[in-house]
Image (cartoon, rainbow over all chains, first blue to last red; front, side):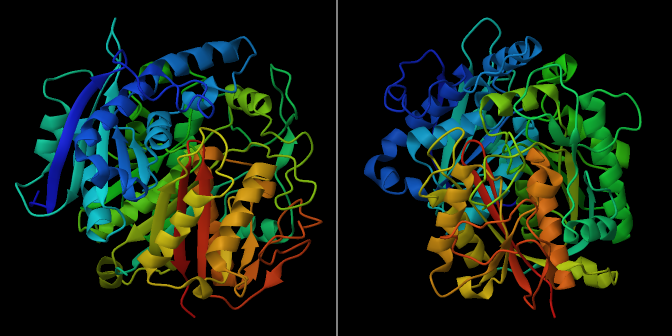
Length: 190
Length: 374
């Protein structure tokens, strides 16, 4: 893939067990979210924090693409088992949708750019996510583009990673770099 | 503004049938596809808009069959082979069969899309996505971007979803399900009823379409997307996300609000949705511009991950035929609704540019702009 006029502005990895500075702030609008969704939200917070005011003033012009082939596991399994018993939770059903982590992250961080959930492995979705982000940045739809992933960890807390892209010249950002940054070691993401 | 993309094929599977023209005639006649559907659970409403089953099949198999059948019809109409070079499939669903089939739930999310693409003969793994009820619209948005970027020459973009017990139960519990009938933008609106279906658009670069003298259904002019960043279930009352999505779509298409004559609204008939959409249209189109707004969920039901693609097709047909179907169920429009509405009967028009707006749980808002040259 040819080099894109993008700059990798930051990245972070996080997990759902990390201290959560956001939950109390949004509890009136988000009564429940799957731990996987929180993991992605935390990773986004850590990846964007170093950008400070420059990012905060542009959150309405920031896109988010969530990648990965897992749905929020806790919410989905509970919603499924509850449905078998003839019960549906009005908070767990929406939290079980594959795009719920991106939805939560947008609420918490105030992201109002385009948002998507590609339900495919990071290795397969990276080129698509990069193409979309580059197009939105190039056309001036957004100033920042986030690409993230979240996955369950057997016996542990879900983990997540996020990269921040913006316009500019610099070292080439290609799909291989994106995968390597999001997945520093082989995991259940891939 | 970027170069338009050709729409060279379309197909849908709906509760009103499968043929583009047959279903269109039934929409114009104000028909709906709701029938009583048995449920193991107590629901607010037993009605749903289903596609009659050919055989006993679980939701996972049904999802794949609906997708495969509809994709094949769209490809045939476009005169294209699924296995052609630089053809990419972009497939979206909301919750598909994941909540109602344990094997489906345990498999990777893209398994259903891989199965569908393989069955229709695709060379490459498909792009699969899910953005709740915006999935069908986002499949089209992504496909168009793949073509514009040069990554593909042809994109076959689908939204598909099936009615399942868990979805009926959940929407009943959420009170998004109407206890009566869907009446989008009506003073008595009290919610939606679920449906199932599939919508497919074949998108093609203009150069590729011209080189093979392809049939041209419409031009995809642009798309815009945004997130409400407000709630996991309710649209933002100020509708900032929907406004941003429409504004971005207009900029992308190189158009002004006054250029848009026709809008296919999300029109879910929940009071919250109708209020938010009215606010979004009021803010985007201003007092001097009154595009005609129509909606199809009163006929097809809310087909969740399929709805955006089905509505894009309805918009294209409305532009091509110069007539808008009535909003099924709408009798007394809300007095402050900012646009004109087709009430009780079809309305003729001479517009050639239209916009389709879709909203989804999680705040996913997407707008698509199409043109049918006169």
